[in-house]
Structure formats: structure tokens, C-alpha cells
Image (tube, rainbow, N blue to C red):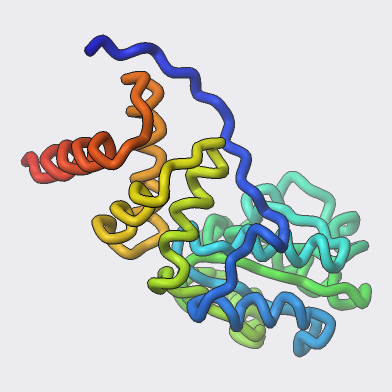
Length: 229
């Protein structure tokens, strides 16, 4: 079957509180966000693997607190004085590990936000002590910050996660497709994201509905391709 060219259409990730599905693997992190006014030292860290919901929780907190969200990589081109005038969430802190200018900017932002009586949320993959921050003063500040860790999805969350990833792409497969993927994929956020993206691309290219046979055939092909040297 001839394949058609596909358009790289944007995916809208739903980031409202109602779109965050609470399960055993993330309930403590969500509770810490909802209890943000009682953070020790008015600061907090959310850590976890790619796709676990760190950015989603940052948006939930922003809705609750009126905070601004910024990627850590943008700190060097922003006014720290302006950012510190309100509650602030800094996403993907490990992205600036080893960048002296960005680490210094975050250090000053940390101090100024708290001095102004505002609150600070930081996110990043893995535990904070694995972020490879080199600035000693910033590292000590991170070590003194409470942290809630997201883990890979449990049984209750995994199928819901796959359904949400499809929904973000305006795709709504039948329940048997979701069940099939739940039992066939590695139990991780990264695996779910990769599979949904591949299915979306293949379905558009081949003009095929997302049926169970189609998905099974695609996963078999992806598995074979992965096994090639």
C-alpha cells in the first residue's frame, strides 16, 4: 500500500488538574502540590522519569497559585528580578547542569523568590542529588529542599496513560486496542509515549484505522527493527 505524506501537526497535551490521573505512583506528589502553601521554606521539588507528569504538576500548581512556569534553559535570557516577583516553577533543572551562567541565575532566583515571600517549584528527572549541579551554593539549596518523587506507572494508571496520550493527539482507539497495548508494552512512560507516536505516524501514513490487528502488526515490526544489528 502506498504511504501518504503526513503533516507534523501539533499535539495538545491536556495539563489541567482534571487531566491528571492520580494513582499510587503519584498520589504523594499531587498531595504535595495541593498542599503547596505549607511547603517547608516555601520551596519544593518534583522528580521522576520522562513523561511521569512533572510538567503537568507544575501547570496544576501554576493554576492553584498563579505561578509562572519557565524552562531552566531560559533562565539566562530572562530577568531574574522580574521572575522573582511572583511564585515561579522552573522546569527541567538538570538541563542546565554544568552551565555556570544558568546555574548562577537559578541560585539568584532561588534566593530572591524566597526573599520576596514567594514560593518556588523545581522539576527534573531522577533524584536531585543526581542532577549533576556543579555550583556548590545551588547544590546546597537543592539538598535542603523537600522532594516528591514520581515513579513509573502502576497497573491502575498505565491504560489511562495510553488513552490520554492518544487523546492528546485527537485519537480515540477502541478499548481492545488500549488493553492490548497495556499488556504488550514495557511498563514505562517513555515506552507508552514512543508507541503512541509511532502508531499515530503509521496510521496517518497508511490511512489505516487504529485497530487491534493494525497495532499488533506495527508492534511486531518495531520489535523486529529494534532487534536488527
